[in-house]
Length: 325
Length: 253
Image 1 (spheres, rainbow over the protein chains, first blue to last red):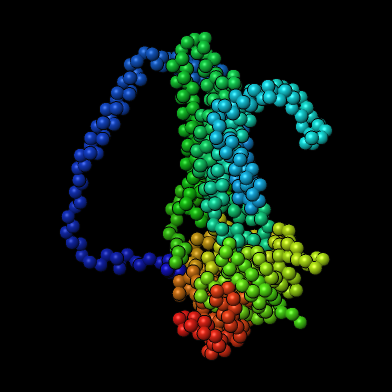
Image 2 (cartoon, each protein chain N blue to C red; image 1 turned 180 degrees about the horizontal axis):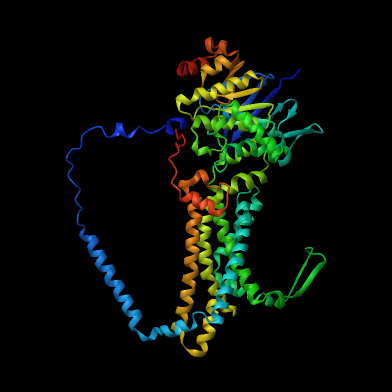
């Protein structure tokens, strides 16, 4: 393997490279690929049919779509959907990190508790969980906060605490926690065991090693699927329309319940979902680039996000590969 | 007077496999001890027991008079808490076969991480010391490089500097040159030789017989979880007393 010094020596000058006189080099001919031509025709035809159907079928009622796209009710619904997504993901990520770290515990009770949580929340349908939390009052009419089996400090009626919004955030967040726990666990397992050993041998406690050495490296493996989960969460928020939480889907439902313009209003909702997921996808693309495998030497480099993105886009000279013998 | 490192009656099992079987070893202060032996002989496990990367099943290890991983109370050895164990490990440097540098940190940050976090040294002071250490391992211009931009030999020298930054009283080397390309081995051994000359107590698991002969004060041959033979390296290498030692040396020399 060449040493770094050898790699960075100056390349040979131009004079040495253009040594032999130009010979007659036959040009490269392009091969016709029949299958590719057929595929282009098929895709083109399909696209034309789709556009034709969208334009000519009056039942799409594009004018109605345009009319409702930015009305107040819809925009408020979009904002509520975004709010639900952000809050639920925040709960899910925080819970996922705790549960993911728990799953690595040497204590069987701790890792078992984490496993049990994932088993339950991943094993029952999200819709069931949403309706369950919404109806918590029929299980526990009163909620109190205090010492277990001892005095309570705060208490009140469940119905006044578990509003549709609280039930929605709670159910989406707790459910997400189970999926994030698996992602975090996978990320932690992806970090070489030698990293923890090196940290311990330097005198770092288990907690310090986790926070400073293991988790930052696991991030590279955790962030890309988390982007996926966020996009998935955005769409899952539509489910809470069943507990009359007025997010985007419920907003359009309220309108078409009176106007009967079901299809155009569902298109309005779809366009908004597509718009937001597109923005999230672009964000995810840049995040993955920043943390990408091919860029591992700058995985968590210093500097702001913008500088890191610029650095990620810049082509670097090949660094010598790590000895793999 | 007892030895600087005192290993007594150490047993270590993985399930039913006995990896170490009643190992006794003394290491004098400021000496270099090399441990050689065939793979699976337990030499790496013994090294890892000295800084608690492996827990003992029986026996004890004492470094500078302190029981490693345990404290004596009421005639019994009680296991230390995680925090106490970490404090003990901080005084014992370890260099790994696969370097184990932190890939998400620069060379400089690799070196200052533990002094700042564990010892509470100020960042400025830790940096200044790190630069001096990089000077010592001949990597003064690599402070801002990431580990993946360095050759194996350079990475291992950074790993040595990182361990030295904690100012350990004992350095453990686990086959430090086994993962290196042959032409890079020399640089790492040079750094280790210089370190030995400063009076650092070193225990080195190695296959480098030349290094052992030249630098070690004491050579230990292990096989099947026991110490078969030990003594001055020149005597052990030139005139081994045990058949197993002779058989091993005839293959590697």
